[in-house]
Length: 210
Image (cartoon, rainbow, N blue to C red; front, side, top):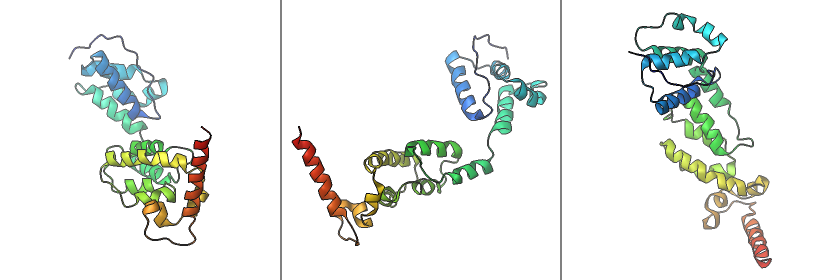
């Protein structure tokens, strides 16, 4: 197959995140109309730094007659990508949200899951990171579809912004946290009605100022 002459300069190969680099590279190939196997292969080789080229010498010094691009891609992904064990360890090491949004943590987790996004443990691992005040209402609404999990995550973000004082939320019983004013049971001590009344009064006070 002939080599296509196209003016394209790829960023230097990212040894820290080969999958993201190849995703960007293949988007560039599509935009430039590059489809020839050898053209893609040589663009990748040209983007390697000295250390990466040295490690890849066995491949680039004697490339196969066909499937050159897939060969170099597989080699670099295997050489610099995380192993399944490393991804699993990183996934399980995510213990809390910190100052990040739930969607940011979810993106990190999905990147680690890769092609294994149907893992049944994912929603449970994700929900355990959320504060109890938010986790409880969602505990009975786990979904198999990660698209729906993403929807739940988006829904969770806004309540989190309004729950700045989590110690106040912790003083409300599980039934009122989950069902609000529709709760039919209440466990003492519970300050739901005190908190609710104060919130209403604060809202009325702001309204009177306008």
